[in-house]
Amino acid sequence: MLENPKDLIEVSALTRALNIFSDRWAFLILRDAFRNVNRFGGFLESLGIPRQTLLTRLEMLADQKIIYKRPIKEGRIIFEYKLTPMGLDLYPYAVSIWQWYMCWFPEETVLDSSLKHKNCGHGLQVMMKCQACDGKVEMKDIAIEAGPGAGMDVRPTQRKGRRSWGMGPDAEAQRALSVVCDRWNNLILGAIFSNVQNFEAIQNSIGIAPNTLSDRLKTLVEMDILKPTRKNSGSRFASYIPTQKGLDFFPCLFELASWGNRWLMGWNGPAAIPIHKTCGDILHSKIVCAHCKQEIHPQDVVAGNAPKANILVDLVSIKKEKIHAN
Ligand SMILES: [Zn+2]
Ligand SMILES: [Zn+2]
Image (tube, rainbow, N blue to C red):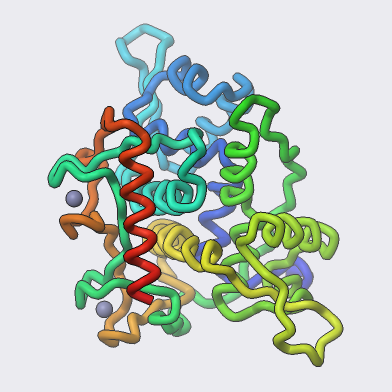
């Protein structure tokens, strides 16, 4: 049976990945899995997540082959949940989210600010580099070419998730994480990073309802991730461009889309191929330590006991360096 064209959207590795990582719970379960939390009770205690939500998410992540579940002892009904190779490959995404969050919400406590790179002993700071030329990668250095997997996907059904983030002392921090882990917000940012910046164009490109789009844009502007622009003033719809805070989020989306390209595109291969304009090669990124420049692996990152103030000093100095470099 032919699909109604209205139910189709362009194949995108990012969209497919965001059908899995659609809110902060999926991300926080992933974070905990990287911190070696592997029992149901461990996740429950660490996240303060409703039991049923946790069960649903763990089952979804197991169905998607990101984690696997196995009984701890034969005949026992206690299970452990561990990352598969596909799940472990999400580390560059997880650590990029952490980096963005620490850079822009250093005073918040939802994510661990004391992480250290064991290899060099410095407080963790990461950056995205090109595997081919070892150059630093920024959004402006990337061109996108169509890949063999280009085509149409059936639009996923829109889940009506409640967007609640509690009332505790860290409610604001929870909200920030909810915003940047929200599926629609990520798709909107993905469109805007691809130069689809006009309200109507974004709506058509990602298949979002206008009221949902207005709502999400309002939040992204309030959070200083996007700003309205007069560009394309011929249109009756507003356009939006990323602020510095928005641009800094680019590696998170790039890493998630790259992971989607590696694992979710099937035999057809990627729908879009990123080219690093600086060297001309297909862009395979790597996430390296900003201090020692070694590639970051989960086993090399530890929670340090450094006073938080020291980490803040680190962040401030890095941000200053960055400003001077621009
Ligand atoms: Zn390169
Ligand atoms: Zn290092």
